[in-house]
Figure 1: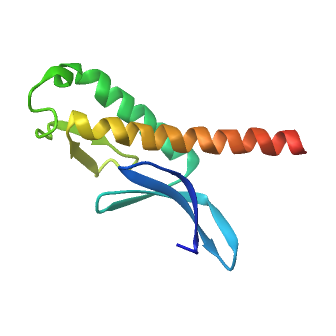
Figure 2: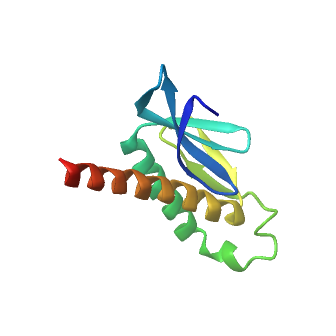
Figure 3: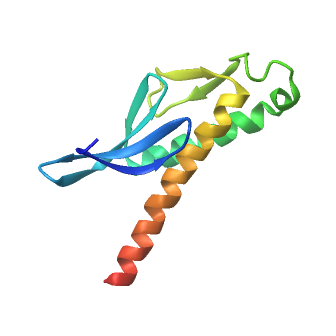
Amino acid sequence: MTNVHIIYSNDYGIALFWQKDNVMLSKKMQLVFRNTGLNLNHKEVVVFSKNITSALTKNKSCRDCKLKGECKSILLKTSEPQVSFAMSFKELIPWKDLVQGTLFTLELAEIIKSLNN
C-alpha cells in the first residue's frame, strides 16, 4: 500500500488518505470495512460517529441478546440518506472504535500541527 497514508486501523477495518504523486489527498478519507469503502470528509465522519453512537444507544437491549453477533437488526445511517447498513450490535463496537480512532488521530495531528506553527 504505497499510495495510501493510513490514519487508523483495527481488526475490523482501516481509515486512510489516498496519495497521488507523493501528495496526500486529504479532503476526503476512505473508511474501509468488509467489502465496503466510504469516501467521507471530516465533517461527514463526525456525523457518522454520532450515528454509530445513536444506533448503539437506541439498541441497548441488543447488548444482552444471545443473538447479538448473528442478528443484523440495527440500521446504521450514513451521510447518504439512501444508504444505511444492517449491522449487529457486535459489529458496531469495532466500527465505533475505527471511526472514533480515526477522528482522534486527525484531531491529534491538528493539535501537533498548530503547536509547531
